[in-house]
Length: 122
Image (cartoon, rainbow, N blue to C red; front, side, top):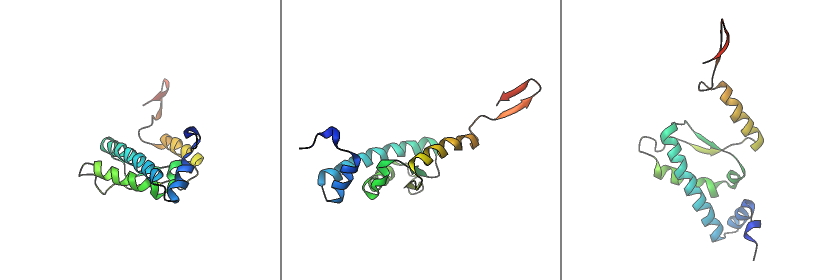
């Protein structure tokens, strides 16, 4: 019997690929929790799409299918079928940097204007 602290997400993925029922249930459970929370996120943020990245998304359909299913089940009718969810094609390190740097160009980021008294944040 394996020490549970030594089991990685890769181990669970490999077990699911081999047909292990418990591994499939782990992905279903985790995906449904994430999907429910993404539906909550959609309700208050109105995103055009949701792009996930990280090791878990490398599990492909094992995690993405339950995420999409649970998100759709928990969305208000106005959002159903309108918000695509996909995994990023970027390397994890690139995705984090690009996401953070995109805030610089966002309209919600503070902008600096020059005044007679110096720089001012608006």
